[in-house]
Image (tube, helix red, strand yellow):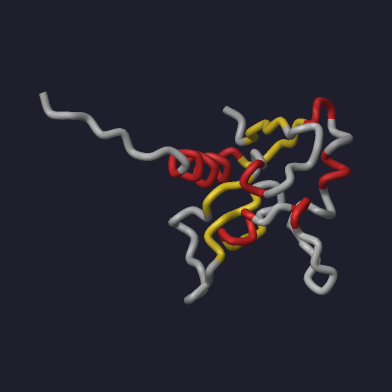
Length: 114
């Protein structure tokens, strides 16, 4: 069994991190620094992000004093040269961070008692 998860990247860099297949939650097993607002994780770079930063759109961020800097900025062009834009990431990290992130996107389903 391989410990590699293959993730296909979109042909164009997403406008914000929430649209990226590499965004996940920091696993609960990882101890975060006290008072840290970083709850999200770029799986491709293993860098922590705040929830607020993941929602900022590059197309709407035009403040020259505070340019948008994302963890993947220095890697994206290289990743686009990979065959079929497939990035190999750690399977355990992907499972422990991406799956919980995706499950948080959907509201819980409420069943009526019968």
